[in-house]
Image (cartoon, rainbow, N blue to C red; front, side, top):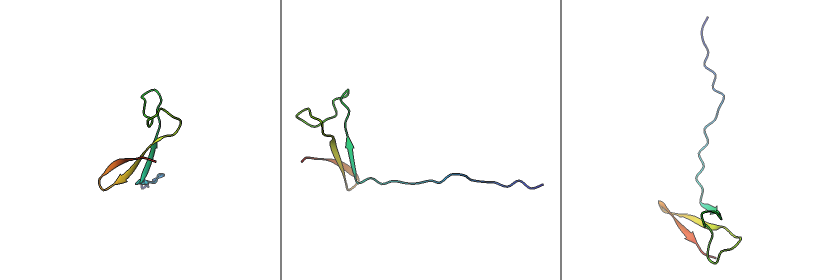
Length: 52
């Protein structure tokens, strides 16, 4: 009897261009302290903060 290998998964890679972050307990919110997230935008090989 031969053994058959069955793969039941898929690998997906995401490359975000924009990340919104908000964490009140670690004070990750833009100044002044508000109810909108800090926004990071991918630029080159790194991230920069986007100000509105």
